[in-house]
Image (cartoon, rainbow, N blue to C red; front, side, top):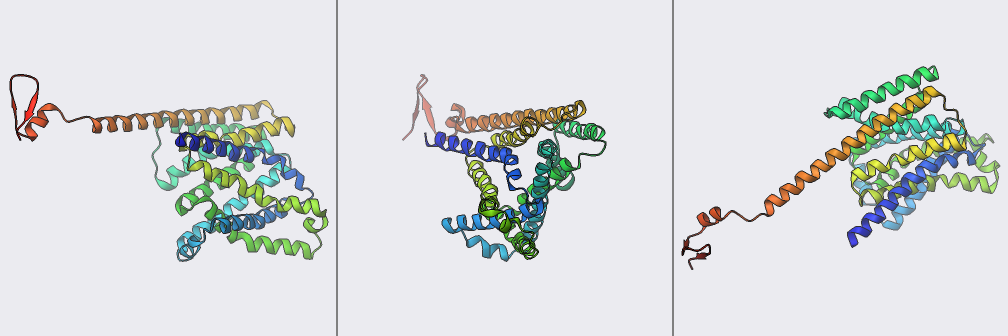
Length: 333
């Protein structure tokens, strides 16, 4: 019963995390007239405040000293902080400049880019269906490039920056809260310096936009940290295959918002490009579920084989016995 409740809590946390990420395009326009860079700087600064309070409440500080003694890990965290800042900044700019659908495409193709990076950088081997999915993804980018008249650079930068961020996180191998604290600590000083520079020039909307606007800018820390905390709670309670399916919720919500709420255009060539992306993701999902099922079946078969009692012949040869003509076996004391 406890396991069932834990899994249910994990699913709710996963839905909450990806649901919030999917609905966040509704939040960024509320921060106008702040520009994307100012919003990004506030997001960096206030995120450190939020995760600092969380770490203080949980009394999780021991990792800091260990991290400071590992220059390589610090370098990886710095790279992660830079690429996720690029990702955040471009995403905010995209939403506030009418490119929500194109931004959602970036997160749709992110799994394909992640797979490609695994092959090119980590030497991973792909199954045939994965190769077909990656090829379909490349075809979708070509179709969209023809439709746009140029490559969908917003989608590509978002996908590659987030895939690079995931690669750095994999190499760093830290908890979600701790890694977010380290990443925001790296960019905190530049972000704070930029905000102070804006204030000195009289261009800061934090001080000129009123208390309500200042509160919204400060809440970017919660908007950033909240879904990540929920994601961390889901990651330890539900299988990775389930998380892999849940990750599509965010771009689906963003795509729907882009069409229904922001009324962005969807000409036929864009539908064709998105259709190819969705086909590639369907192939990836089917292959992942099939592989996961085969792995579970093999593990179950191995456990059953290990649990079976030894054959009678093996037992007879292992200890002296005598038979009295019946099927009963009597051990000699």
